Image (cartoon, rainbow, N blue to C red; front, side, top):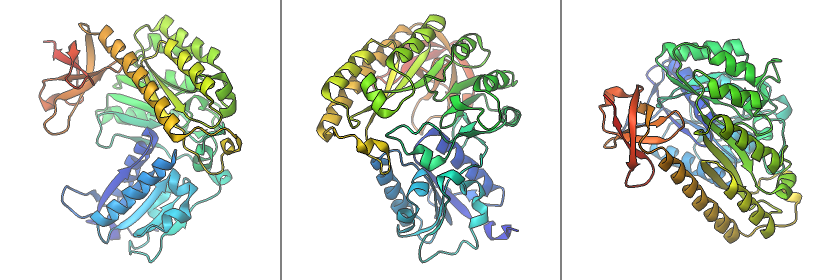
Length: 439
């Protein structure tokens, strides 16, 4: 039995690194602590509890996690420091050795955080609680908003793919998911709280159904019927799992937005084989063509990794040529980072850091061209925009159904309101279109 009296009047600060799934889970942890009496720290206050939810997708991510922990320990002296997430699962001993860390929780333990807090007294050395990958089997539900307008609904966790460069299966375990009935109930709750947009998150959401015998398409159809939720976005889905029936359903759906995020990782079939991906460039191109044929104005974001082991010059040039021809909107470009324990380390050819940087810059420039062209096509159109409260001193902003960022002059009272906006020219930074609300 947990003595909740120790949490009364305690203040917590939360720091999240990495993916949307992490943000969703951090928000759930925050709600868990709030329910036992812990409030979020206000500006200028010193926290009693620090929660850091980490990422470990690259060595840079690991470094940022360590820096964040050091910074929070310094900013909140005497606070009880909890570290969870992928870095904590993969390298618990390394995290526990960081000065000021009291508790390290792995993927299986983060959902039961309260059970491990004890009396919140500082420890001489971080205490670790993790299990092996094969024992990570629980699904921790999460549908949270945090400080954002959008809700993030976690529908799936873990991955069975074991791509050669990736540690996610080791950090999050095998693929598993919630039940459609439970997820629909969470979406209904979000609607009752005033939520209008939900982002569907997970590690490999197209693989949904492994633990319940359902399908992702079944989930999409069920969520589309939830009254009050006016927008859904599919955060990321593998090209081999993005079926034609899903694309066609989104095209005529009530609430699923014309917005896709699809990991390509490389436009070279030779590199895709080295990565152990489950598709080739022909399949990927066919998915883009299918989307464009039924949803011409869809926003299509694509993940690309540069500089992986084995990516010879000719392979990259083939990849660049392929991506250049794709009718996509934006590239999310990542430089390959070697991860201990991955099969990619057995590949001989290593790309030099300077070459990785050069390739990354070329793809980022290509991305800017594609995004600019996509935005330009929509200037003068009238679109529905879900407005969001900005940072102090900034304009209200929001996104169209097809994910064009728009800035408007509007009162903050319109936060989380859908308004009709006429799209104008680019802002000074070139990061959004200026819009005018239609009366």
